[in-house]
Image 1 (cartoon, rainbow, N blue to C red):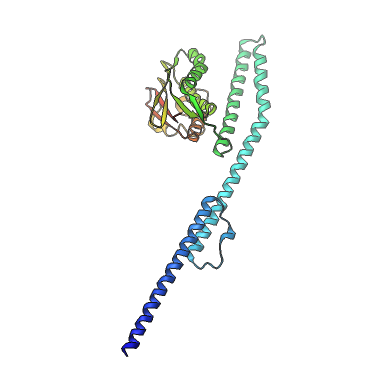
Image 2 (image 1 turned 90 degrees about the vertical axis):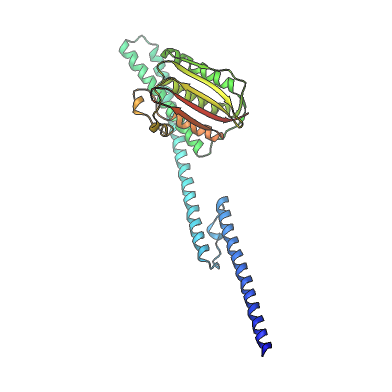
Length: 300
């Protein structure tokens, strides 16, 4: 009798062990299946055919349904982005010649012997044409950057050459406003795409000159462990704390500067460029006390 009891206990124990092993194997298979699904989704190779109909797990079925929906959504978003990019490129291509002609004929008209009223109108046409050209060019750049169609080519570049070039480009405009623009010479270097970095820092410095009516604008650089910080500091109208979070948004323009020319895209483009190069931008400002934009770019 005791033998039968012992045998029965042994059978139960073996059954429990077998069941435990079976459950362990099934759990590992389930976890591996879920892991494979997630990995294929991360790699962008998840497809409907990846689902095995023999899978019995409700969790697997629900995850499969979710990943399928996500893949379709991602594909749709990508397709929409491509359509938008093509549309903007088409607009740029179709408007390039008309805008160039507007600028050309406004230049020719400005050389004619016109009365003061006509000269003012020609100057307005030229200014608005330049504004339109800048807007179209910026939208194309923004679209290509956001869709990853334009890559950066980072090389070691001189900060001093960058600051000197920007200062020279803006000195005539600053002088016309009765303000100064200066930079501090430096021996620092950064790793960036020189053309794109120039555009980003120039846009910020251009805004500083535009919104400064007394004093001036100063450019300088400071070295950190991983970055070089380029400061663009002005004595202009300043920016409130509420608006500081909005000024990098596309087309945002403060009511305080509505009388100034601009389209509200320069700072947005600057942030896209610097972020794409592995850097970032910080702002310190108070209304009536000027602003300081700090551009952090990887060291050379």
